[in-house]
Amino acid sequence: MTGSPMDFLTPAELDALRLSLRVALAAVAATLPLAVLAAWILARGRFPGRGFLDGLVHLPLVLPPVVVGYILLLAFGVRGPIGHWLDAAFGIRLVFTANGASLATAVMIFPLMVRAVRLSIEALDPGLDEAARTLGAGPLDRFLTVSLPLMLPGILSGAVVAFAASLGEFGAVITFAANVPGETQTLPLAIYAATQTPGGDAAAARLAGISIALALAGLVLSEWLARRVRRMVGG
Amino acid sequence: MIALDFRQNLGDFGLDVRMEAPAGVVVLFGRSGSGKTSIVRAIAGLARPREGRIAVGGTVLFDSAAGIDVPAERRRVGYVFQDARLFPHMSVEANLRYGQKRAGPAGPSDEFGSTVALLGLGHLLSRRPGTLSGGERQRVAIGRALLARPRLLLMDEPLASLDAPRKAEVLPYLDGLRRRLGIPVVYVTHALDEVMRLADTLALVDDGRIAACGPVGEVTARVDLGPLVGRFEAGTALDTLVAGHDAEFALSRLAFAGGELVVPAVDAPEGTALRVLVRARDVMLATRPPVAISARNVFAGTVSDISLEPGAHAEVAVAIGGVRLRARITRAAAAELGLATGVPVHAIVKSVAVGRPTVHP
Image (cartoon, rainbow over the protein chains, first blue to last red):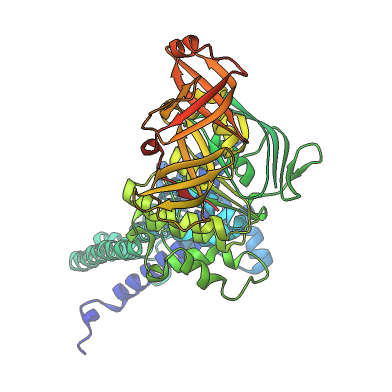
């Protein structure tokens, strides 16, 4: 045995940790641009059906996660309309895969991210946008040079919260992606599996400890980021 | 030249703006809520009139009949907001260059340096707007608008949110701008000292309309506009040239179209163009030439207009040479002297009552 800090984890547990980080990162990265877009539309758009879109975006927040996983199974399963098309056109299968775990996680964290970004959009000073207009900046130019930089603190805090929530996502993942060690068994799923195994208490405790450490690290990181970014945007 | 002729609905009241002004500084003057800001927002393209036409120097920016509505970002109309609106996430230099970068073909190569020097911003370039004083922020905002090479500069009460010392700090820069800028300026204010100092053309705004528009001296001399200009400060702006100094008594003589005005010594060489405000309440009227009187300034003229108000006061305009001077006297005095249009009178102005002259070439 060498002196690595991960020595006290078994290879299977280490896999669960790596997979969790990978799934969470992928979910946050894939959701972020969409969340910014959805938040912008919901905050600024005035069109029929806005209330419906708002409800749809927030649905995963109020539905039981298992139900979200089940709906995903119906849509993205190999015989589901989207899943069938993905499989036929690109050979992509999401059910019972790590990418599927990322998809289920992404759907669950989407509303959290939209809410954080939307708050930062609503806090934007419309006067700055007007000032940029009189200085000759078109709509996309203004979004990229004025609105987006000023939304950055909100976007980052949304991403950190969503990342932390991703690490804990259980119901939707186990329903849609199942509990396959090394493929879809993230930390919470591994903890659940350990508690179901005779003599698995020590493994469950170790994994729970890692979860707590990750959560704390996330909190510290987000505080630090928030302070840096606030200074950067001069707020 | 600025030509405005438009109508716009604004909640519970509306704008009905018709005015033309030559190049130079046009001051929109009026009470808060009279519609001044709404007028400049329409010129900038930040608000859209219901119908009408807006043209600056021959370029049509808005014309409902012709279906023209140039977007704000393509109007090249600079806008200095009351609250500066600097971008908080950029340095002063990045703020200044924001409009310059988007202004199309490069201007004179020293454009940035000369603007920075004109506004005294050199030592601020690397700072963030959050660390600037109110006066500094406003100067940066002015520089940012100028560097975008606008065809017209709108300034919406740029000094209103500043305290007196900060205001005194920015005003000299505005003076400098007024003399050097080749572009027309529309300046919104409700402070009479800014009108005196900056205006070439004065437009009085009342309840969404232009109540009067013309050269400053002409508009301020109109007695029918009294309540709009404000009772206490109302007076006549006279454009004068320094004619000479009297060192012994510390007096200066200022020549204007109606004669010479003697005032406490001003620190300006002969020939300097100065504008003075003669407040209506500081002008006395006599029907016979006064003798043995302490007042230094007696001008013979005739009553050109008289406005009797419901209260104790009467406003009288006296034509002296080529100008009109406003006098605020009691209604009783007007009756006793038999004042009416065409009556010859002598207007008496105490030298010490004349406001401090401002340079106005």
